[in-house]
Image (cartoon, rainbow, N blue to C red):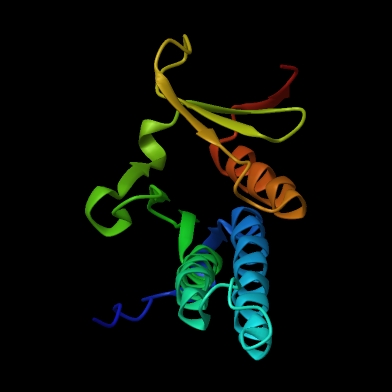
Length: 162
């Protein structure tokens, strides 16, 4: 199923889970190495029959492929999209079905902690309700861009210590 083309790509900022994908690339490489090692032991089975059968390499190879596919998905698909309408938030599981749109009119203020790991969107001026978003899945150099864009758009934002 192909995604619909973006209507105005020049008017939105996309932030992916690219920092989170690094871990899955490493896991994929480790499983691929295990699969290659198990496959290489098949050359020595005639001298040592206790070595595992080469078919055992299929298990870590399948896990390597699954981790690589997940890493590609995390790198390519959005976590947060800032549009002229608002902020689109895509969760880790079932992002198409569970996507949430927070329109700019709902956001009274925005705060980002000093380490830029948490974005808080307040729905009222008293700051009694809102949304906390973890920014850890986003690469560190992109978090400052996101914080500046959200705080600049909302106007009532700040950086805070936590």
